[in-house]
Length: 259
Ligand code: BEZ
Image (cartoon, rainbow, N blue to C red):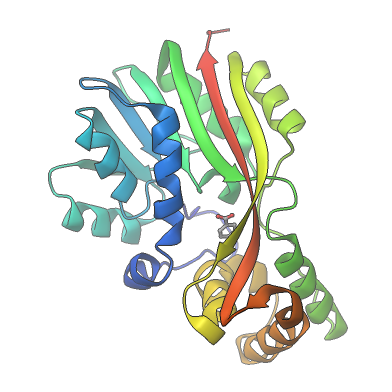
């Protein structure tokens, strides 16, 4: 999910996203399994991207609204799945008149540091006993990539800060409880993730997702920095012709008890 207020927001190329980074929603199928959607349920897919998982959830007979802050993503989702509902909205500030049975989110929430505002919006739309099922990057997610970009940029005089929110289990479950949730399941696990694109996998990942990470670096210097990052990580993370990113996932199932 792209947030409009970021200083330099990602501009999503939805075709490259779908064709070159399909692992994002393919891994999300496991999160849909945790959701266990049922026919007739009202479900929000928060940070729906190009809508593939919203469609998967709708296949179970649920009524799904996919919500994303990127207009490009919503346009592509509507084109691909005209039978589904998609709404352009900000996860930090959305509301609907009718209550929902579940809010689902895959690989989106780590784009939003203002997580209390997100949880506030979620509790405003969930009915009591409604569930929140999510996967996001957890503490240490892509740490080698972020730290190496920071090191190489610093050597050239640029200060790069991580734009992402990768919480610990304790931090996130405490937040959930403060917002009236009972946490039924929370786990943090390593998921080394093969990037598409062979030798270009890491640079294409950084080009797709790293706009806000690379924002302090002038455009003409970015490629040089990316090449040095590749040189430093190649020995550990380029395995049999494929770049492997050090993803760590936080999975959550929580029930809204109302405050
Ligand atoms: C992730 O899915 O963990 C992720 C993707 C892009 C940027 C940062 C994290």
